[in-house]
Image (cartoon, rainbow, N blue to C red):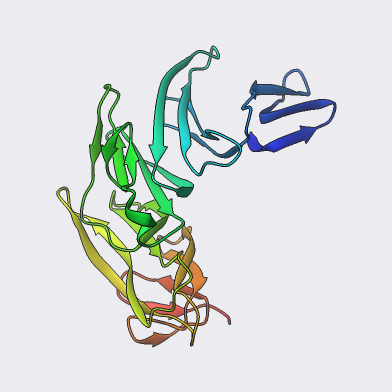
Length: 232
């Protein structure tokens, strides 16, 4: 399944399209008038879609779609946000992190369903719970094999920062620093992807030259004890 603005697959056109292996064809899941930029399947096997709210706004509408096609949740993600990150927690709840296109955001507060937050958790009820204490601008989420939730942050505003805590770990109450990183000269510090590797280590890619003081050019692996450079 994938999303776009619009997306084309075979003879099907839509904004969210899924491949049906039994029927051997593509199927339109959702027609979003202004396009969609993220999809995620939650632990309860429901599809979440991040849909643009208008042709010019950076607001998003979060929709939850049941297997029968019913849309049973609509939540607005506001505050001049960029693409969203998703993660499923071991307890079955869903975490959504909002990236921000501007550091100060012109005084506009990021919010989900009208509640001020950059990272929020949806447990199945009508209320989104804030997960406070994050720094920077959220760019990725990852649940580790031991259940730890890791949040990656970037300086998406484009201003050059020397160092930032790009990784934080959720301790059940707030986000605590997990790693520091150094940006290349005159460039913003950005984390693009986090991935669990088969051996249990964690891979991080982004725009950085060092992690926790260890020289790493754009890619680093956490082996459980320290960061190890990966290529250049």
